[in-house]
Length: 116
Image 1 (cartoon, rainbow, N blue to C red):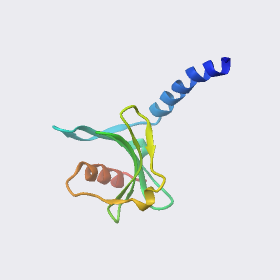
Image 2 (cartoon, one colour):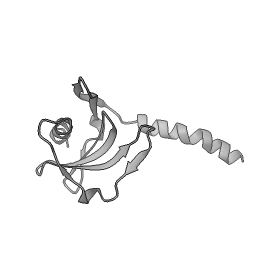
Image 3 (cartoon, rainbow, N blue to C red):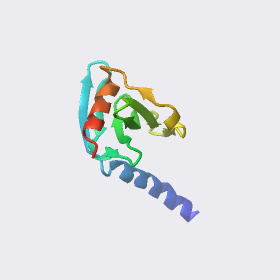
């Protein structure tokens, strides 16, 4: 029973700590109707597969990958209104073309331009 109480307190604290670490949010766009869209600059990285990985937040929080040359975006994870993640195990088969002049394109371009 003591273990359950410790876990009940420790788990939320650990989750809060992991979400707060290594985040450097940069405003990409502030839309009159849809609100502010930001990207975590610290999350941007180029994977060994050549894709650029990043986290963004706006109308929903998302973990994504980008094929910068092919202009394809992959959604790896979305967070619902409670902050619960919805993961997409088949994300590599579900890439979508980046829509010109969209919020998604602004995030995509920033991630691709800032990947190391």
